[in-house]
Amino acid sequence: MKILVPVKRVVDYNVKVRVKSDGTGVDLDNVKMSMNPFDEIAVEEAVRLKEKGAATEVIAVSCGNTQCQETLRTALAIGADRAILVETNAELQPLAVAKLLKALVDREQPSLVILGKQAIDDDCNQTGQMLAALADMPQATFASEVQIAEHSAKVTREIDGGVETVVVRLPAVITTDLRLNEPRYVTLPNIMKAKKKKLEMITPEVLGVDVTPRIKTLKITEPKRRAAGVKIPDVCTLVTKLKNEAKVII
Amino acid sequence: MTALVIVEHDHGTLRAATLNAVTAAAQCGGEVHALIAGHNAAGAAQAAAQIQGVAKVLHADDPSLAEQLAENVASQVLEVAKYYSHILFPATAWGKNVAPRVAAKLDLAQISEITKVYAPDTFERPIYAGNAIATVRSDDPIKVITVRTTVFESASAHGGSAAVEVIAAVSDSRMSAFVGREIARSDRPELTTAKIVVAGGRAMGTHEKFNEVLAPLADKLGAALGASRAAVDAGYAPNDWQVGQTGKIVAPDLYIACGISGAIQHLAGVKDSKIIVAINADPEAPIFSIADYGLVGDLFTLVPDLVKSL
Figure 1 (tube, rainbow over the protein chains, first blue to last red):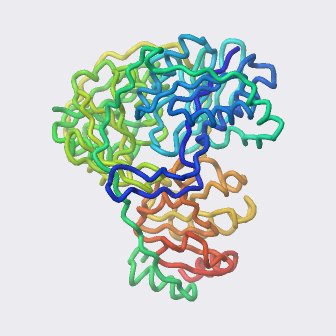
Figure 2: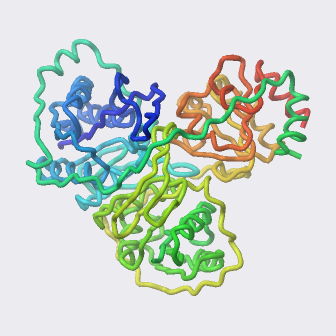
Figure 3: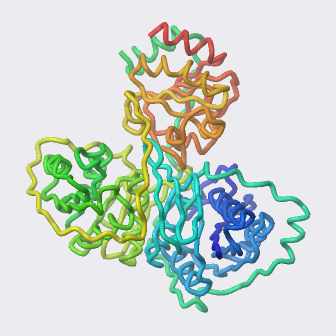
């Protein structure tokens, strides 16, 4: 069983981005970039499935500029077998990425696609569901537990108020939530090994996919800042303030 | 121009988030219709018909829609999508699951988690955990949208008298099957709609302490309980209590953060709260940079004191 794992290169989760003063975007110069944390969980899950014998090959895929190769090398160091970069400098929106992934699904015929539920840059939470739709596959989003059987996957999903379990027929798309696993630290020997693994480059044109953005960003602005308030000396003062000043309790 | 709100419901009643989505739909400029895709869902359809501002309710009823599997609900939406200019879902776990499936099948982009409607084609949405705000325009013929429910007022649940039109239900996709659901029973208000939220972080130390210290405060205030990612990861609180960028976005009148240092991802989920109180031992904790009232000290004495003083 082949598993395809799409990964996205994003601003590291510890970085607080700054909006450019001309309103055209956020400042990405000299900002640390990393693999989207949810995608890292997806790679880890796929590699664990391979280690358990449930999968035979793990293929990492990224769509974006040439620097995405670094992100793919990280996936290879975690344990993916080979990687594919769909290289483009175009702005990629979720629908375009889903179409690129659909083209790769047609080519590679994986039994499972595992990817993060959301990228922490655009916060869209769309790509996995869109890929499932385009490939006419079932979907199991926000997974916190995955069990693979011969022709199906049993997935526990995080929903509002608790969890639910569904069984999806394979091939299927699974998107990861935070508690699915804790990704391993990549070791130096594995980083070295990853350098020797195959990384194929391809373009949207070769895949026959039009990636023209559908949504136009008119401007990017700073959010309204909350001013820091005051430190209160004791509990009684706090209660008085909440009652009389803020009027949020009676 | 007509907007269709895809209603989240439990077949008998509506989920509150629907009411916020109706308000956003009305701001898109046209008539508002609502779709109930469910099983034995006449109760939900009747409830939707009473929402102020809803002109028509479409009701599809079939066992295939009983468990709200994304494949089937999306197919049902696709049956009627072409009649609408806007299709809106609440940005809940349920809405986020279904909406992109609908959008992609129609070859449409989706606009996620809108926080403002500027024009029928122009919307505001937060990106980078709310550290930047994007104004975006979609030229697609149908706008598929998820609505951040905390920023739109609830439409009134009463006063409407829409006609309910029964439509044919789609057949089961047979791609997926429902196995089971575990919903925590609680007498407390729901996290995303509660007026007051009491949340705990890593400093709570254990699952037992989390409940022992915070539950009395939540009970006294009639508050919902929430948690930081660190507290959830450590097993002090269940997954669906997580507040933040990738968990629940909350905007209560009063948010009380206990032992939460305030990672940017957490702050993203609470900064629209009216009043934020932070109780933390570390006077330099980032949470104090957005808190209206800060109490520095040991939460294990301060929180019980607070309960006594209320």
